[in-house]
Structures are given as C-alpha cells and as structure tokens.
Image (tube, rainbow, N blue to C red; front, side, top):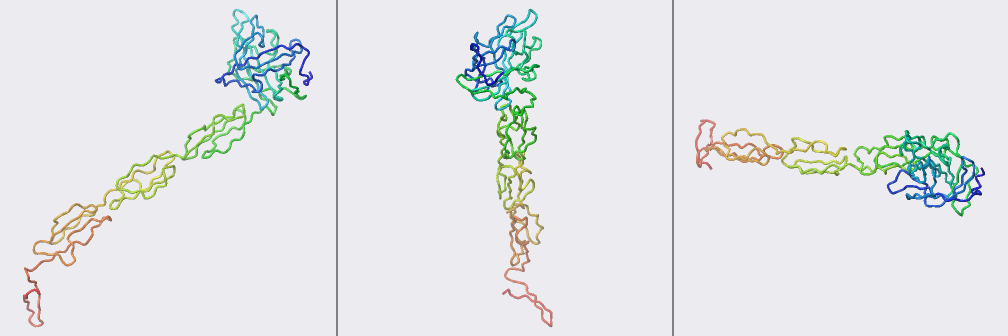
Length: 411
C-alpha cells in the first residue's frame, strides 16, 4: 500500500466516532487536534482487502445515530462508543480505548458482552494522523474487523491495564489514515507500527523533565524520570511541609503529579512572662532561635534553664527558669545588744539592734543591717561597750611611784 496516497476511489461515507468526555472524565484524553474536527478516513477492510474512504468525526458529547461506526453482533447493532482510557506514549503517539455503549448476547445463556476499539494514533502534522486498530480480526461480528470481543465470563474492568488486556494482536494490523479535509500533508514512507507496551521504539518512552532542587528538602527516594517513576522528598530538620506534595509521580503526559513541596521553618509558640526575670537576648521564635533570661536584682536561679532554644518539634528546650529571692544567713547574737526590729532574712530585709542599758555603741558602729543582693548583710555586727555613770568617765591613773588610781571629772 502506498502511504502517500490518501484518497481511494470509493464513495465517501460519514462515520462519527463518539467520545464521552466531561469535566469529571479524567480517564480518557484524546489528542487535542482530533476533537470536534472532521477527518477523511482511509483504510483497507481486513475481511476482503477492499479500500474504503469515509469521513470520521470525534465528538465530545454522547450522541448515538445510525451514522456511527457500527457493527452487527448476533443481531444487535453496536453504533455508540465511549472513550474509557488512554495511554500517552510520546508527544506524537498515544493509544485510546473505546467501549461500546450497547451490549449484546450470543445466546440465551451466553451473558452480555461488549466490543472494544483499541486505536494507536501517531501524529504526523496537525492535519494528518495515522493509526492502527490493535486487535485481531473478529469473524463473529459483521463486518469482520479488528475489534476486541471478550467472552461474557471474562469481561474486563474499564480500569484494567490497557495494553495487556485490550490491545493485543497476533497478526500485524495495517495502517489507517486521518486527513483533514482540504489539506495535502502526506504520511512518511517510513511510517511503522510500534507496539504500545514494552516497545523497543525509543519515541514511545515517556520521560518527565528533571525537577529543580527544592529548598529545604532532601530527596529520600527516586526511581527515575520515566512513566510511573516516583520521587519522594523530606523536609530537612526544623522545617515542615506547608503546601505541595512530598511524593510526585511521572505521568504519561510527561508531567509530574501534584505540585512542588514547600517546606517552611518550624515556629515555636511564644513563651509566657517569667516572674522575677528579664530577657537579656532573644533571636526569635523559629527553629534554633534562642531566648536567654536573667534573674532580676536580688533573685537567683534555683531551677529551670537560663537559655532555651526552639527545637525541630516546635517545643522549647529545657524548662521554665525559676528565680527565687536571695536569702541572707542567720546572724549570731550580739554581746550586750538586743534585736528591736527584724523584717526577715531575705533580700532588702533589715535587722535593728539596741545596746543594753548601761551600754552604748562604740564609735563607728551601725545598729541596723540590711540583706544585700549577694546574700550577705551590709555593715559589721554592732559593738556595745559599758558606760560608767552620768557625766563621768573612768580614767585609770597610775603614777610611777605609788601605782594609785583616782577618779577625775570627765572632760
């Protein structure tokens, strides 16, 4: 057959291939150039090798009419088809599977059966495609053509693997062409059939583009960049996923599923005010940021942590610092003095003394002491000395000769 010859000397017949496609129908994707366009369809009938030229139109609505591609299966007319799945092989090649809307039976106990058309398309230009029907000829339907016709007891699910279930053949099919009306593009001489699954044809390998590095992530596993291969990310320590997906898969349309993962730094909650402390430094509240406390004057750290850090699990390290008031040690009794007032032994507490009757403080003695921030009492212990009567002082006078003492008026 000369592939450069696209028109046969036969009478054109309009055939509509009906494609069920809605916004929610994500299982079947036709080459976009084919949809809602009228194509001159040239092929050779496999039952009698006669050339046929018809007009074929792919539609996006459910429309049944006598002009659809039709078969007679045991008296039942099959003339409406729904696209149920597809396989994108490359930018120019794809396989599309159509299922008959109507079922038929070959006998009272044979059960209901359906027909399937498996088409492998190759785009030459926007105006020209060639394709193959990837099934063996079925002689039980009229006309005999390459239609997959499973028995009633083994009807596959629509989601079964496309190639291994629906698109098998033992005798090589012949090329068929689709040409836009009024165009003159031609099929190349070296046009050939490559099987859609496990094909040695390089152009059938679906490869997704390499992905750019993603900030704040590591790749934990990647099987490759071909169809169905996956790549798995993990946010680095201290970061968490806020959008996108950590696992992406190479799809048969050469794009990656989901969207780029976005990992953002972990934030710890704000900390409550801590009694009797001041914050000396704080770098923030994100991962590895720190906050450092100091006890206020007169207080000291008794438990908890003076510096805390934001951790990867969004908690702060250590524990809340506890600052308690400084206490001064108890004071020993003071000779010839008594305590007249004492507020306590903590920071800023005071103790006040008075000398006993007949005693008076020595020069430079302070009778009040205060507990300081460093845990010590200010001043020295008071010193009380004995007095010797009103207006007089005792003076011990000793002569060199008599060793006598006498009282003299106090000066």
